[in-house]
Image 1 (tube, rainbow, N blue to C red):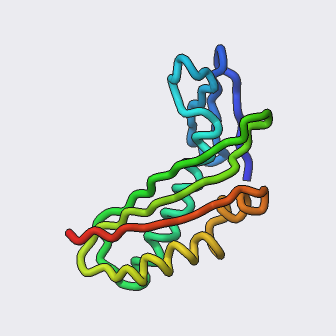
Image 2 (tube, rainbow, N blue to C red):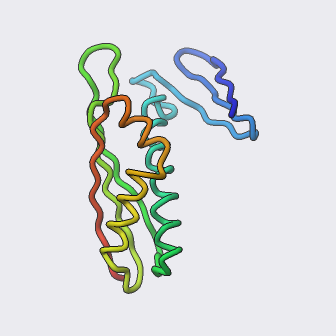
Image 3 (cartoon, rainbow, N blue to C red):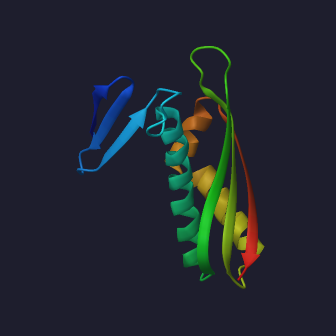
Length: 136
């Protein structure tokens, strides 16, 4: 896997993946023209976990209409301001979805499949999970 990050101006950078996708990042807390690199890490965690959860639920033949994950994080006060705690709350909407399947999918993602979560956890980040099932 390869990528490149290039400085644009001020504290703005463009990341480009080997597959040709780009993402703007901005560390300027006042301008906020793009997500910060740390926000990108959180979105990566949410994306990685969501791919697992939805995939596992689909394999279990659950009728998922939508799924999103709400992520909250705390960071250390001192530099480096690493994440110390991250909580992910999955909101799964669908028809006749069994909560036990959602629970299993979240646990499998957290403990076995999500590379981002496993990497952050090994770095000392406390990661917790919750979920909601909404009938539609």
